[in-house]
Image (cartoon, rainbow, N blue to C red; front, side, top):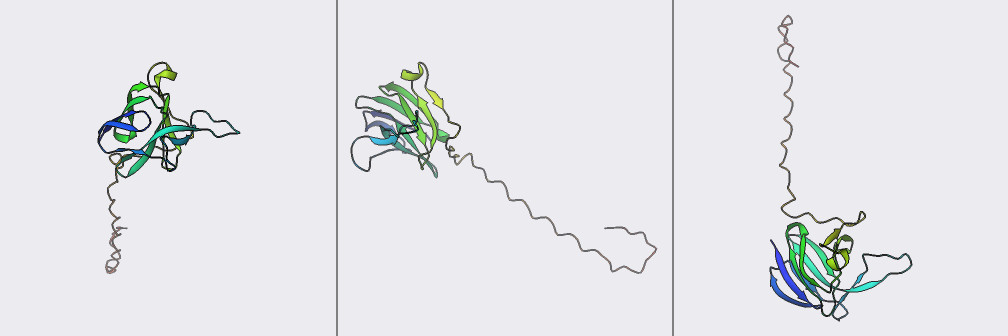
Length: 167
């Protein structure tokens, strides 16, 4: 399955094809969702940035996609299988990030305004795990139970001279 949309400004979603990405509204109102700054962390302080946040669901798995937007920004977001994203027509947006449902950073994207070229994907070593897609999760076939050992046949005690060594 795939999904595509164009985000203009902070919350104007246009040309939405599919149903995997859903724009989240801030609980306290307003146009932007406060997200902890993921690209630079200072030991003594926590900084929040205003983002447009999408809840992305594929099968039974869900993640958050936070886009550092502004009033005049524009971006087209295409979502593919396994929570992969492509970004096009990026205007006045510097970064985006993919989070787990517990807001652990999975990876973040640095757009051409900062990276100086293509969209750069950064996966932190201590980041959260990307959910496995339903197609990637394969249940192994059930292994048959081992056959019960055949009982020893000790009823033929007549022939002591026979050399029957079937153990």
